[in-house]
Image (cartoon, rainbow, N blue to C red; front, side):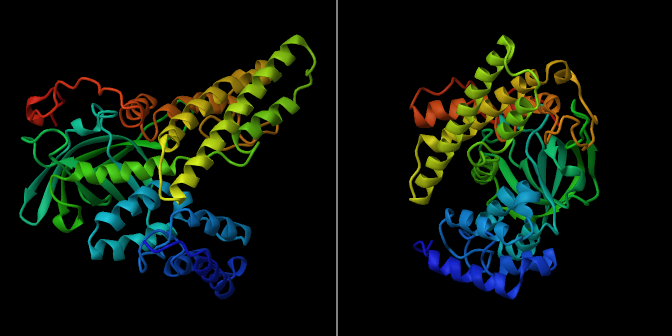
Length: 399
């Protein structure tokens, strides 16, 4: 990666905005031009949507483009594919895969999902049972994936499958790019308790994948997946500016209350301020982690940021309906996107119902605590009876 060169990025931005004014340019045309200019992922190599610049400069690019009215890219509208998926492909993909996938993923002309978790392999991802068996120049895949965000609209998927059942569970995995329109792929959306159908289960029956769609060496998929998951945690939404985001919605609900002076109201206000301070601490923690990353360093702030965001957001979402008194238990527009009758951006009761997902997406809170204990605090690892044992001798659900 080259040394940081803000002047290069600024000049490239100026040229892009001059040649393709966002407010009068077709969105896809603009995003293609942004990719070709190296402003899609400034930290990627030149020719692949980047400028070989530090990751920290991408924030400056995004903020200036947003202020100019640029359309949202796939990194916003399909973060799984255009975020960690693209980062995995640029690192481990072949030249053909990079040329074929990176640009349309960024422009959202190509949508994607991530086929990792399974019914019996969520937090312990390495225990997964989906099998990929070599057949000449192809792999034949059988298994089931679950909790796959956006699978019902995805064109491609990043798939992690077991290719050597005789190896220890971390050692016999391989990662692939899968065309979701391939024969044998069945997607079933799952109805959630908030009424939505964002997550899916995916059944794979004799699915053929060309070996040319493999990402990285055979049986080294665990290392590839860690790159994918690392960017997934980076893609977790960050706290907005001071007082913005979810806490702004909760403050608006407080302002809409008629009763602000009773004993109950004063207790609620005190709780509101406690949550406001917690959200602000998370925002500052993320800013510190970003500053360290920009300097090429990392500290415990980076490991703590995802956990802190999860815990803080979930507690806020579970408490917020109390501000609405009796209305706090009502769900409006179950499974639909409807304006909230009390004038806030999202029904607080609906946010409360959705809150358990915050502790699961991108790695559960328990897993994050294990990572922090092991890699940050240096505590002993949890006992693992299957460490070093061939996968086919461990306890698992056969597929």
